[in-house]
Amino acid sequence: MGFKRRGYSREVSAELARDYKLFVIACEGAKREREYFEFFERISDKIKVDVIDEITQGKENFDSAPVWVLDRAVKYVDKLGLSDEDELWFVMDIDRWKPDQLREIYMDCEKTKNWNLALSNPCFEVWLYFHKKKEFSGLTKMICKEIKHQLSTLESGGYSPEKFIPDVFHAIQNAKESDSNPGHYSPEILQTKVYHLAEALLKKIGLPAFNAFITRLQKKK
Image (cartoon, rainbow, N blue to C red; front, side, top):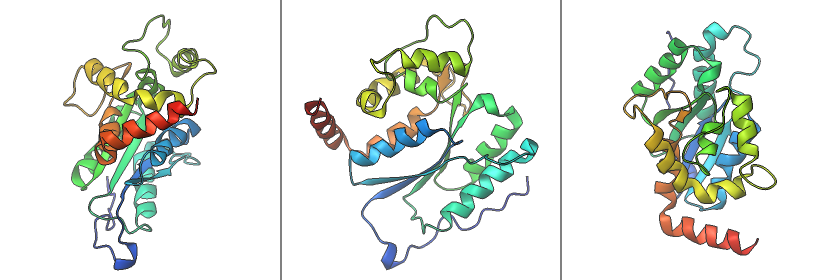
């Protein structure tokens, strides 16, 4: 595809030395993804989350979107001085992409250390839905608009990270159980691979810190 990676993995200077792990998350501009992942920073100072959103904004020629997305991500992380421990995740919706475009991005992630792809089919809200339910029911059409509507009915007042992230372990379990092809990067309809990213975040945070945060959060209610 002619895409050239520019120095993602490199030695970090003493000025940039730190005791946290950085998760750089490239997504497609939805406010919901940004709010969800940035919420994890509140749980533990062992992680930082930097969201590159709107990675396809303004790209009129969608046939070259994989090159555009990857190039934007590389230009962004080149400014940060990322360490070998840090991770870059592309969090993307299948409904906006052609299969060959997604495969291009997946193949480049396979070639680059600590680059990862987490797809949802058809959209990110599938992952959010699994926080509250094990399976979908009552869908007349498997489209994002209807999935988003169902999501809004699962909690009084609708969706918010504060109401959903306490159930992230349920989401991981439900998403895993629904994943009909866990060895493949691309999920089937009403499935998601975002649980891989959630597991990586929680592994760094640690269960004691997560449980302590949720306890404090619940006491504020």
